[in-house]
Length: 126
Image 1 (spheres, rainbow, N blue to C red):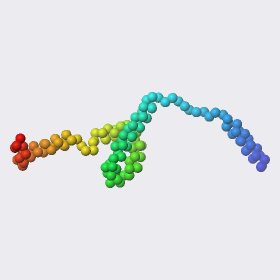
Image 2 (image 1 turned 180 degrees about the vertical axis):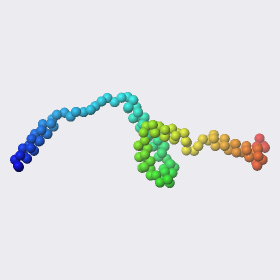
Image 3 (image 1 turned 135 degrees about the vertical axis):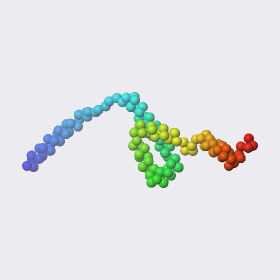
Image 4 (image 1 turned 135 degrees about the horizontal axis):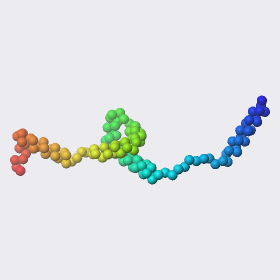
């Protein structure tokens, strides 16, 4: 029995050592230009979104809501390219300080209404 086991082990070693020299089959294919461009655009979008989300005031808001900055980074990294594009557009549309012209317009409209109602006399000297 012991001799039979040795024969089997020797046969397996001979087969395995003879197969070591054979070249391994590789599956290589050319990468299309559009695939490379999509990967580059995804990388740019990801870095832009992470840069915008790395602001201290946003990090403080995340922590106030119980979300750690590591979770935010992990969730952003898991987004698809389309979701990253939508998030980037949303972040670009929502500036941190608001639109200065909109604020001036609202203040002017409020002052005009107060003047017309007679609460203030702001525009008498004009």
